[in-house]
Amino acid sequence: MRSLQRYNPGPGLADFWDYLRRPQPYRWPILIASTLPALAILLWAGSEARTKDSERPKVTYISTLAADRSDEQIMAENLANHEKQDQLRAEREALEARKREFYRSLGSATGIDVKTMEREAATERAREEAAATARRDEILANRVKAGAADAAARNEE
Image (cartoon, rainbow, N blue to C red; front, side):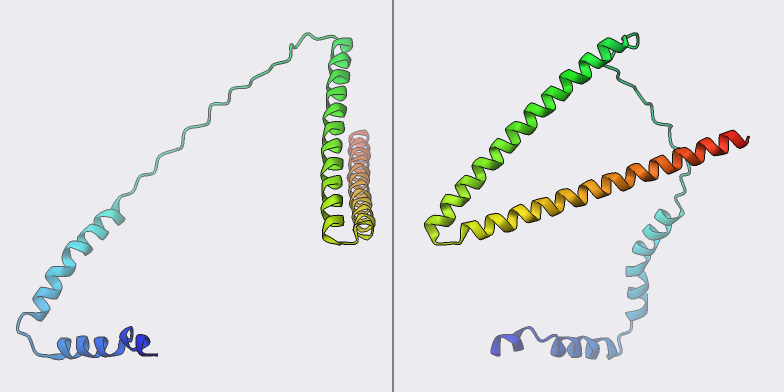
């Protein structure tokens, strides 16, 4: 409690107020002279007006694909990319399986009910996967509806 008294601003503010209330012959001229530089800088900075149109961004398109590719080349590249994605997905799943095995052994060593936790994790993963599938289906349905509406609008024109 004693240390809080050291940080009490009340007595300091009271002393400052008493000092300001004392009659001093040069109080107002000194106050004006001390605020003039700050006021001059603020007025100068506030009066600066620079309105310049921003430059339009220069866009550089980088294309790594040849424009004259045949459909067979495109399909071959798509299949190669698909196989690469499958390989990456398999590696990720293997890593996750290794992590689960590590946590399973750690949980067994510390006396945690691992089987219950695995069941809960599996149901959580299934729930997340079902939600993602539902979200994907909803987006696809909205796109199909929008495409049908666009086609109907074009037919009316």
